[in-house]
Image 1 (cartoon, rainbow, N blue to C red):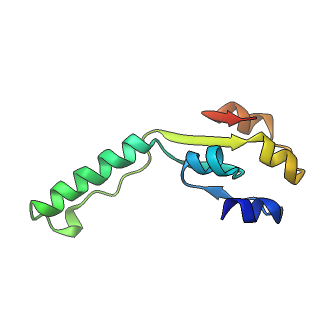
Image 2: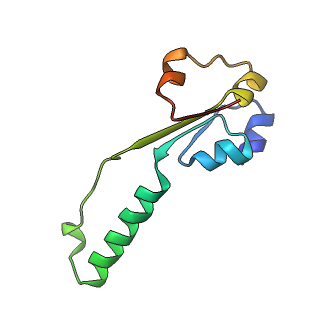
Length: 93
């Protein structure tokens, strides 16, 4: 999907940084993949142990991960503000 949106010059933000790195998406905002994998395992263990769905936690991101592709931004004619770049954990050129 990312190449289609990029070619159509439609900026999009995804949940996983690999879409920015591998497919040229404009940006991603999500959590570190290891954190989400650990959270999924924890929830699966609780469900298999018989915990009621209402008792399962709803968590906020503990370590947000922002990735930005400057190459994609340039191809779309978008200027990424310096404040966004300063907060990004990964910037792809």
